Length: 324
Length: 80
Image 1 (cartoon, rainbow over the protein chains, first blue to last red):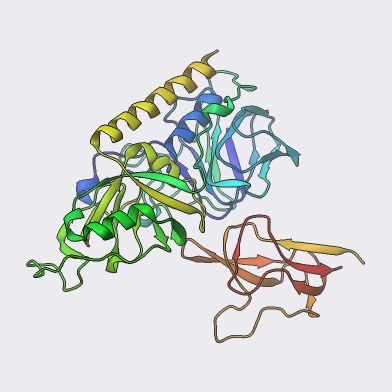
Image 2: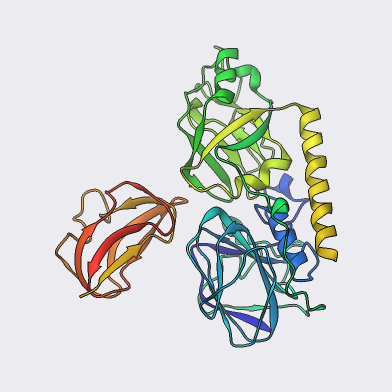
């Protein structure tokens, strides 16, 4: 039971829910950038929610099946085709041995999640099959899939084809995308006016946006409060004495272009952080294309925790809808 | 003679040259073979070659050098 890669797409990686527990050693959690989408794709094909699937960014792969399977594509609107025939997103469909899965042009979003019944069964590294390409860890030999790869599949349990996710439970960013931010840890480094403006302006996703971080541009450079550089920090006002970088933290090198660290984040460094995108909105970032307008929306800890509960309720609703 | 369209599979920035100081891959009126590179789309810090699926004469570009493009957007037209 395997899937042959005929063409890989742009950068298609095997991802699951990641490998927590090694960030202090510089190895990020990794895993699907849009976790809810991967969980949902797995539910659609009858897998465990955390099974490994494929994350295809902007462009889909071409895959040939060597055995019968059930497939679902969620996340970005990247329309699947089976032997050239259009199939639905967010809906599981049966695939026969010998059939070829390919994709049409991306219509919206950025990352599609392809779940296959049985899940992808490459060897786990540090407890996860997620591909961390920069560290050459997980996936197929620590890299994105390539033409000629044969991706092994695990044993599949149920025949789950024909399930579909109700429209209201298909989460996608609006336009402009709204990303809720908890200000800190270095909020005190910028002026109040500058901080207000950061939230008022509409930014735009830059071309430099990947699994490690998403860069935004188009807003006004930040105004810093003058200081004596502390020991270990450089003279640039955006420098700090090296510190830990949380997932979702927004560093602004030189005060010009904010970068939100994502699943393959670097664990520390010397840039100040204006705040942190809340965990509930991290999935949305994974669905932003370059040039997409985006706004940062100020929230507080209560708002962040309430948003996390909303996400948990949405996940519960998806489970309920697909259990029937 | 049929008009064919070359589309971008990716969102990003379109370039007609391999590097700023080098000549354009193709100019209007040029012959294009199947598999020829007609431009680059830059996204996620990497450059992706855009190849023609058709043989014929390049009649024109629909987007300018360094324009932002979206997936499925027509980049150039070819008479085959």
